[in-house]
Image 1 (cartoon, rainbow, N blue to C red):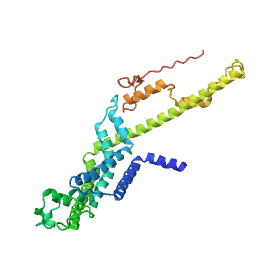
Image 2: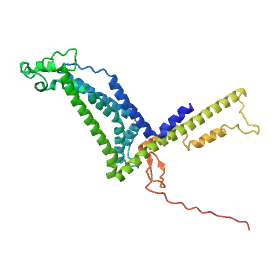
Image 3: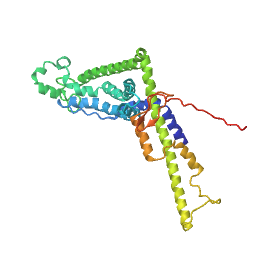
Image 4: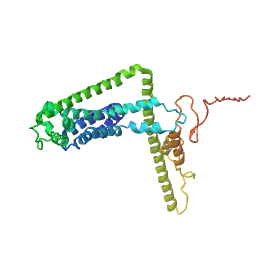
Length: 344
């Protein structure tokens, strides 16, 4: 268990590396999924293009959504976007930075799927088999003898070797090699363009807007760390609240049992005073409660944190009243006067 705890703490402390690893695993999984996928072209003129478009576009969309789901920053972005401004303004640049960071990681697996699909060529062959130039690659003298629907029905069977019977018009191997060559060229072009685009986004963009980039990056990290620390503080407070509540319950039960055994006599200490009901451990846990000792106060605090987060201005704290931060600036300093008395 200690090893698993250490691994979990390492992943929490290195969330960016962890998310990059998850995106890499999803990219490898997408390539493995395509290799295990049984591509079956319908070989019908009205269905080949629709089937191929679904294979090329639907899985990348699913992989992109999964990439957003496994990213923990999605809920943080939605919370920051929908929260009331309160005493803290919302910076659109920070929201754009967070969205772009998540989108870049989530796009890795869909890009791998599209690239592998184009390099394989089956999807492109199924989609554009009816567009093969018969007059250039086949027996062009026989093509005019067929109507357009008959020619499309015949060429739509090119991806299916067991049902294709048009070798007298166009050799199947010639059409397959022609379309796969085009598909692989498009695949490598897609890989090159996405690589260049990623290089521009990751390397060139910060050079032109370095100050704005650093500001957006800093405050995005701040929002993430602030949320983690707030969750940890709430967890610590909940543990202390539960301990004190349970201790008070057992002490009350013990007191009732003593009263029952004594037939109504109150339990007293040896010096005649009432028996203590709060132990040292309970006092220590009460200190962790920070003065919030009932459900209503805690609910108001959580509502205040959501509706009106404290301003990002250290050293100028303002008292929390109601559901917001009251006051219009730093509080006035109080003068303390000490009076000394001496005996004559």
